[in-house]
Image (cartoon, rainbow, N blue to C red):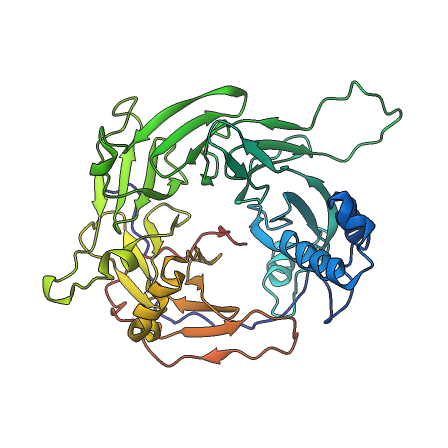
Length: 445
C-alpha cells in the first residue's frame, strides 16, 4: 500500500497566486420577483398540481400554496461538472435534471504558447447556456413499508463520453438511473424509440458515487452497505461492504460517503458517522469486511463532550486527482489526509469553530446534523467547502499558505469577498507533497 500515489511531488516554493473571483449566473431568475428563465416551467408545474389546486389557483390561498409548492420543487439539490468543465448538470427537488453547455470555449488554433496564454488568462470567464432538461425521477410510494419516496435528486455523476454522447447517473432515495444525452437529427418520431434511461438500482440509495477508472462500473451506498454495479447490467449488483450487525441494537456507526480511487480501480474509501475513513482493496475478497487502512484522529479524553461523536461524523470525502491525498468534511472542520499517514491529517481547517459555543442550540433545532460537501481545486492548491448563510470557505493548502477566504454566493454580481485572517489550526509546513495537479468537481471544475 505504500506509495499508492506514486512519486512524491515537491511543493512549490512560491505561494499560490491570489484568486480573482467573478460572478456568473447560469440558472434561475435574475432579479427578485422575476420569472424563471425557462418560463414554461411554471405552467408545467401547474399541470402537475392536484386538480383542486388548479381549479382554485386564482384564489389567494391556493395561489400561496402554489407559490410555496413551486418554490420547494425548484430548489437545486445536486450539481456536478463533468471532468472537462464544459458541461454542467443540476438536479432539483422536483426530480428534474437540467444540463448546461459551456459557450465561451475558443477554437483550438495557434501555437502552444498562445493556447497556454488563452487558457490561463485572468480575463477568461466561463459562460454556460441552457442545453436541455428531462424528468429523471417521479414520486413513488412503497406499499410494503408504507413509505413515500420523494423525487428529489440526491446526486448526479458524469460518466465517460462516447461518440459525442453524454452519459450521467442520477439518483433519488431509491433508484439510480443511467442516462444518455445526444444531439441528432430526428427524421421521424415513432413509438419504438428506446428509452434514453436505464434504471440501475431499486433499493434505498443515499449516494451514487462516480464510476471507476475502467468506465464500466460504479458504486452506490446506503447507511449499511456499499454495492458495486456494472453499467450494462441493471438487474443485479454486488455487495462489497456490509456493516449491518446481526443485532441492530449493536449498530454503532453508519456509512456516510464512499469514493473510488481516481487511478487504482481496485481501491475504495468510505467514511462513517464515527469520524473514520476506511480504505479497502477489492482484490482481497468478494465481501470487503476488513480494511487496508484506517484514517482516524482520536479525540483527547479530556476534551470529549456530549457532542463529540455528533460533530465528528464525516459527511463527505474526496480524493485528490493523483490519489495521494484524501479530503474529508465533518461538521466543524475540513481535513486533508496523506494516504500514507493514517494517525493524523496533514492539515486541519477550521470552518465552524465560531459555532462551538452554540452546539446546544444547534442540537435542539437539529442543525448539528446538517451535511456539507467539500472539494479540491483544479490546480490542487486550494480546498473549499460550504457553510451557512450562503457562505463558502476557501483555504490554501500549499506550503506556507495563509489563505483563508470566506465568500458569499448570492445574486449580486458585485459581491465582495471577506478575507479571514485566522490561520488553519495545523501548520502546513509539513505538507511537502500536495501535488499541484488535479481537477476537481465535487469534483468541481
